[in-house]
Length: 348
Image 1 (cartoon, rainbow, N blue to C red):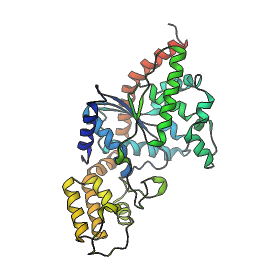
Image 2 (image 1 turned 180 degrees about the horizontal axis):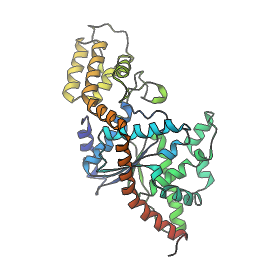
Image 3 (image 1 turned 90 degrees about the horizontal axis):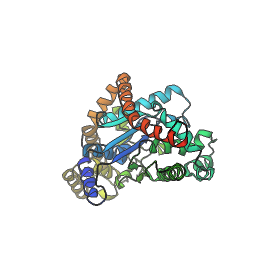
Image 4 (image 1 turned 45 degrees about the vertical axis):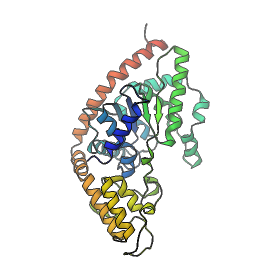
């Protein structure tokens, strides 16, 4: 299941000629709130890039942000399901736990300790300006202390592993800026300790159209779920919005959601073939949807089977989490020990 990973890997290699001189340490977190199911937009917008970086040899730290999820999920069984589903999805889609450090946030006790220390150097104004917090309050969500201090915990997540790059969506960019501000305040107070990580907004492929033409998002209810049942998948794809052009008439692939989604999955030759069929009126929208459905199964059925296997054996996921946490702690223990000495919690 390679999709466009080879293309993305090629783009990363080109970038390194002028931007990257060494292999990068990359950090990313996934919050298991809402449903743990991932959709096609998640894969194309983020996971595919992680797999490309993994293949290139970058050092990846990927964590399931279960502490962050507690600000939104107050149903213990649901949270547990979400945690396992997210981890199973990443592994099934190609993240290799032998090459990528995959861990559960709550298995790293160093993170909340560092978060508290950061809370002593971060200003209230910094948190009050957080867009995500203000947006949730504006939408009527009663703010908890955890929601307000969310950026400090995120700063600890990030800075404790000293990453070079943190890939984020546009809506998360400010959190990286806050982490950099906190690192700068700590360094100014206690001496140079933390590197300032760079944010990286994924390539334009991240803008994947949903079944209604808007950006694919759980909140819009327009997703194509990677790990739904065959019946659910067929219903989602056959329900993609199209116009009323009758079968046999020429179609425009550039304005068709079905074709745009197919283009994310198909080879250049396959894209050209279908585009030609569109313009000649050789296929109708129903035909195109069936072609997309077949391509989806071709690409993802292996991952779907692996996902089902992992969900049926959560002990395998627990073992992966345990190994990943042990590997992560070799970094976080070292960083926290240095911090504790600098702030005076332990002797010099």
